[in-house]
Image 1 (cartoon, rainbow, N blue to C red):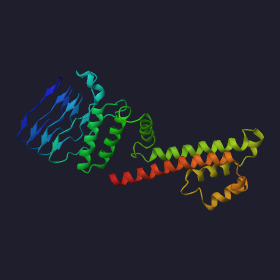
Image 2 (image 1 turned 60 degrees about the horizontal axis):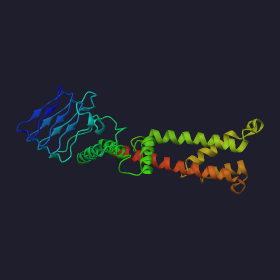
Image 3 (image 1 turned 120 degrees about the horizontal axis):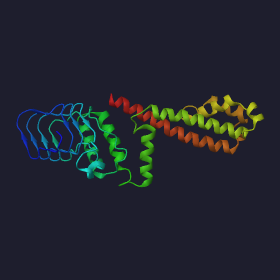
Image 4 (image 1 turned 60 degrees about the vertical axis):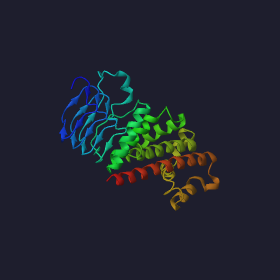
Length: 275
């Protein structure tokens, strides 16, 4: 379909399918009544797709559908509004399976309507017990909310949460961040210990400082262990003799490690919930 496609207020009394089709422009499927199953499988939607007010009394099938905006779509004003299907006020007697719905990430979209679309998709995924799709649409909704209804600080934390763990969809990212901060603070401890003096660098307990950083990176596991106490005694002669700047750096590393440790556990929990 090269032009706009209009099904507004139509009624489909028998099972219908439009599979493997490409909608190169906008699709208006509003206020439609579908009495039986309707299959859109393997179709590509490249415009603004509106299903507002439609009632699906049978199964609505969107398996392996791809929603990706076409640069030539006629309604250029809606380009920032995402090509995600608008299921606002759409009634599904049988929750659709949205697990294989392909949508571009809304990286540069800060539109209320786009956030509402993803919120509705999240609700439908929750109704259909598609936990992975639910988590994915929640992430998209939060990304769309940045900059228009939340404070700048909250928007910053949304971006940070996404970069570190993709809203708990990634275990690898916070783990890599934890290792990265461990190496970073190891370097800080070496600088604090030696002042980058060549002679002191040659004599510095590099390995012990690495172990010290590793213990601080996992505050719930290694920060208060007997090994950590022995390490502090070896490096400083005890906590009382530890320089204050080492204590301050250790506190911030403990804080960062605790946050990343929490995100790793949250991602693992989310993974098993999705399974």
